[in-house]
Figure 1 (cartoon, helix red, strand yellow):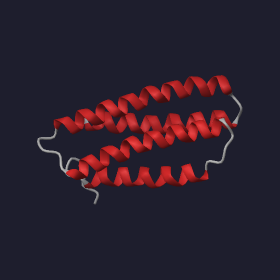
Figure 2: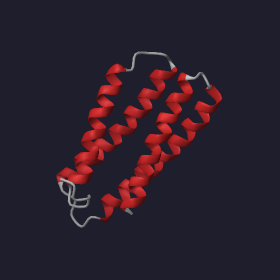
Figure 3: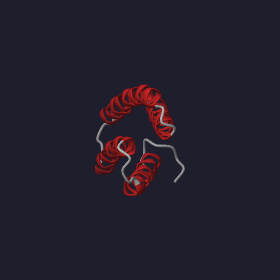
Figure 4: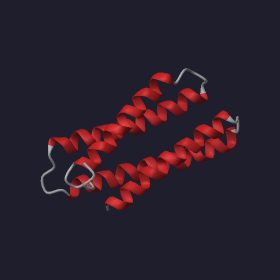
Length: 118
């Protein structure tokens, strides 16, 4: 299950970047299609994350924080796409996105169900 979760969020981030590039190139139709596929992967990330959470015998508070941070990563990705589409400033969104993403990855690797990098 962990591998499916990691694969889905990696693909979601790649598709998110592809969507941003297509928006910057003014390819609205391509950006819209890839954006819809990205949203499908958001659902995969959420479902696999909830399945991992539910498979734990007794999740600690750290897992609750990681789950909240994961949802915030998805929210920030969507806010970045909307702000980019409306040609608004995205500097604050990028800063928050990077901080929350790194925090989520760190927690995912640090916690007992994660890989032993830290």
